[in-house]
Length: 329
Image 1 (cartoon, rainbow, N blue to C red):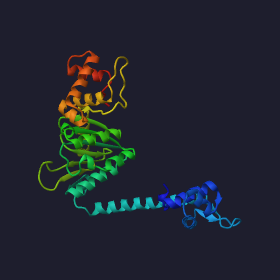
Image 2: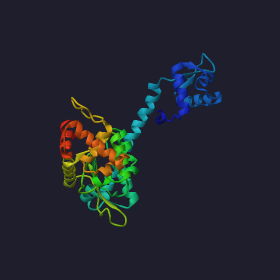
Image 3: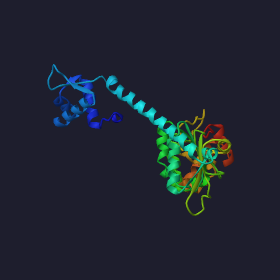
Image 4: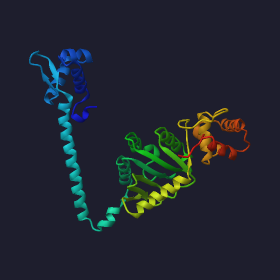
């Protein structure tokens, strides 16, 4: 946790013991941590070098920890200053770039990125640079990164970035697509499904968007357009919201689902089956995705119809929405 201040795990553990004990010796700390005395003594010398500990004059051979707020606060102030200087440097470089670029206005608005590695790099940058929200339209054919290869997505979610994603139904037909969907839902992402999305799209904080220039099934290097501002970006936001509004939600767990007031309730597997059927998947596809037998899927659907007193699957779909088993968010 204190690696930011230049402390490795060993030095940090010694510092924490030193803070707890007040004044102590390397031998005492070594006994508490189960580490060699020489190793602990070296860690204390490093703490002394960093200004985080000092020898105790009245008790030779013992050390006293420096107050964390004072010792570490100075480093924090220095790092804040360094960060601010870095921000100013980026601003200066950006201004120089703009001055030296022909066609300033156009280049500020859009950027063409070509090649798998370049596209992958921009794709990661978009997500890792997001602060609040990612919006995505996902096709069955990836440009440069598949759902399972998108390592930046869980990192962004862990930082508090919310995701709203609309998938083409074709994505759910592949085993990899189903696994990526389950992981996304486990992270708390909102996911909906449509037959087809008009284009693949990624958008960060409604400020930067990325969409393909070349057809996804065209041989050769992929090319994408990065849009940073202007009417085109506003149009892409409107496009996403329109697709999102008409898409069907999909859910793979009971989390957050209001329960019926009376009668028998569906279990988590029932809700998974219902959710997938409502976005248009066949019984065979549902069975494959959930690793169930076809007859098991059909038997569970029949049971849901029996406990609700309904006779058709269309009625069951309406009932699921009315009872809150499947909800739009």
